[in-house]
Amino acid sequence: MFGSAPNAAPAPVAATTPVQAATPKAVGTSQLNSPSPIRRTMPEIAAALASADSKTVKEDKKTEGGICVGCGPTTAPKTGLQKIDPSHIAGATPKAVETRASNSNGNECLRKLILASAKNVVKNIYGNAPTSGGWCAKGVGRSLMKAGYQYPSAEAIGYHTGGRMKQMGFENIMRKGLDAENAPPGAILVFRGPLTKMSRANGGLPQGKTRMQSRRLRGGRGAGTWVGHVTIKSDKPDEYLTDALTEDPAVANRTLVAIYVPVTCSGVTCKGAAARACVE
Image (tube, rainbow, N blue to C red; front, side, top):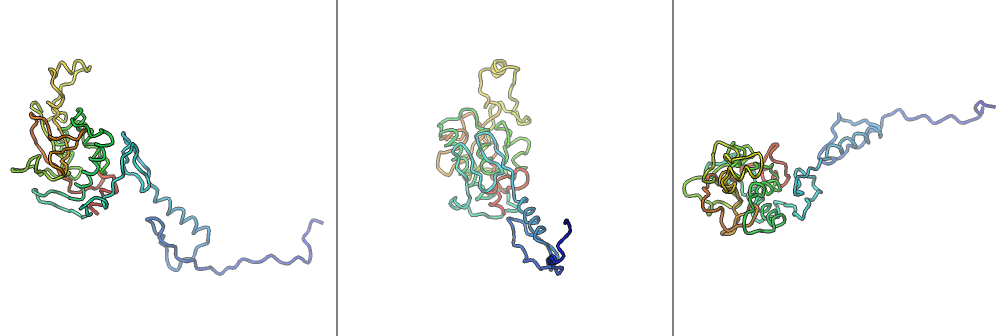
């Protein structure tokens, strides 16, 4: 009644001889490595492939203004900013740069990438305004972030004080005979104000508890009197990119103190694939 049929055919027996699986191809940027010959069951191979695929996933990070930092290859920036590819920039041939002399113009590929990013940011975020609105450090910072670097400083003079730019792979090529007009395109120009204290990250900017107190302490003078100014040299005459598209690098009472050019882009300060392509 409940027993098996006496004449039932015996169940098939699974083969005990191992079957040699085909060597898997490279998956993403990972490759499966195992002793030869490979003897794996199909479930084991599927699990290994899934593990390799998971290693290629990158987490996208966004910053204010929709600027995309460390984004995956298919993620596009927001707010109308165009994604920059160094291979599409004239003359920006990726090139490894190890060391440079003090009178070098840095990595040309990186300079062109920074300049292209600056033009994109100034046009799409600041509408190519003819004069700075007092957000020069933020404007240049956004341009550097779009090119793949981290945000250097909240104050213009902070781009020079404290050695932050050097940590990010830039070199100060300031020397006799070199000024804002003949600096290489894509260079970062840093100016001090008439009351700038170079030992302070904010230039010694007087700060009150309220905005009104700060204005009184500053005697009606603009913040640039202490924090200075920062801008990016364009490849066109009389054109500089900051939080505006200006004809002059700075106002009359600003003094040029540094000309920074990118030499490399690596480590935690360099997040962009395009920038890394210029030095790999």
